[in-house]
Image (cartoon, rainbow, N blue to C red; front, top):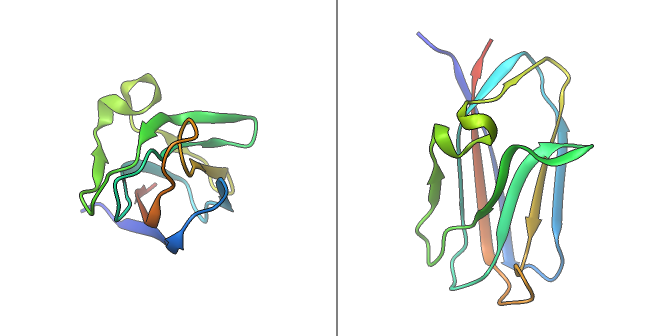
Length: 117
């Protein structure tokens, strides 16, 4: 049986600037699921990568709107495969809060699920 773990981030209110979340992974793992959603009609986009390459694992994607998360499938990850990450790899999440100067996202929630190993 796969051992899964999830990182969830929730930022209440309206974002007024781009968001950058960075952390080191506690073990070797595979990123197997991501989703993103805001509570309003907005223009926010996001991507997941490493410090040197913002979209290394998930290229720029829309954030779900009106409480309907956009869930990314394996084919939407860079290279069409779930990324394998070594222990202590740095993972970076980048959110452009209003896309191309559109409407800012409100009550943003991001979820990333990993398979251990």
